[in-house]
Length: 176
Image (cartoon, rainbow, N blue to C red):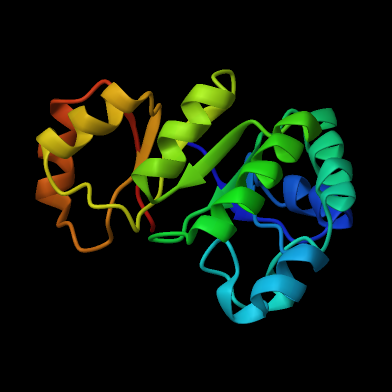
């Protein structure tokens, strides 16, 4: 079983691993993004400045610390959609995060998934719980896009989750 924990500062890695975390997810809300789009439109469904890394440098430090403890870090980029000007900055953020060593991207919108696969094929693609993944056809679609994991929507019943799990090669994640 994997215990996935949010991560917002590099110094949190060691105590969270010691408490049982085996993997992390994290957002980044850079000064550039805040200046251009405000904190009300964070790139990952986390509007509060404190719920995100403030810089790519601190994300890199956290990734290095997590990797020292054998824990992967997944960058959340999971808005339903992005404007054209946001997509430009989002692409730069993805490039920098990949350079920082993140292990995966958690994404909700299809255009960002396609870009992630095209530009960063070695970084795992996780489909956000915000994305519609309610049936096996949706899971097959995401697998065809190159996803390795789908975080299932919270509206699914345990029986529906079991049915989906029987019919997919994808890793499935659920909130407990």
